[in-house]
Amino acid sequence: KRFIEKEIQYPFLGPVPTRMGRFFSSGCCQCQVQSFHLVSDMYELDTSGLEGTVDIQERIENSLASLLELLKGVFSTCKGDLLEVTDGNVKTQPAVLENLVFFVETISVILWVSSYCESVLRPYKLNIQKKKKKKKETIIIMPPIFTSFQDYVTGLQTVISNAVDHIKGLEAHLIALRLEELTLEETSISTEERKFSKTVQGKVQSSYLHSLLETGELLRKRLETTKKLKI
Image (cartoon, rainbow, N blue to C red; front, side):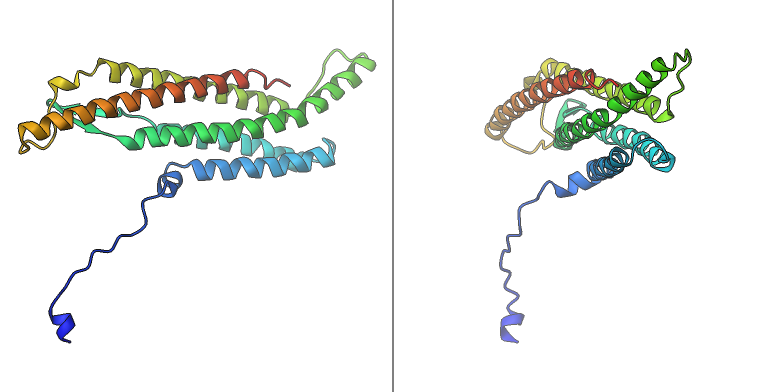
């Protein structure tokens, strides 16, 4: 009782924040889970063949459309500036860069899945074309799954291309910022503290810019990879 009455407070250090919260809230988790469901359906199609698997093909078509919409949702969380300036005050937005990193990681997973889908669908399409040529048929009716995949690839290229353009815009915004003309949100700090904070801000700006350059380069490479996804 005496111990409680003293109301002594002991500092308790909890675990450091992890990336999991942002990973789930950004939609990347749902996007990657959906892509693995797609792998499962595509494997089932690969082992069963095109004939008599209309239900599987429809599931794949729906998964492709759903995956693309989820990816667009993930990209929407990457919008915004890394350094926001309001009335001469500057504020960092690290969540934007973190979401961009998650977006690139998710794109990498999706491209691996897409490559697998392409490796399954291409032989089927070539086989149908060969059979039609042997029968000398001028009109070749393909299952809609091939068109759905091509539409999906086109949409994927558009999303990645938009992300590359967005990163270019972020880079331009960072380069154009003149931090020495800005002030911190906290106005009660001393001149020495303000000078130190300016130095830190400059390093943050440089670090953000370096990260953006690396992220943009990775996305450009991923965009080139999508051009190989042809069936």
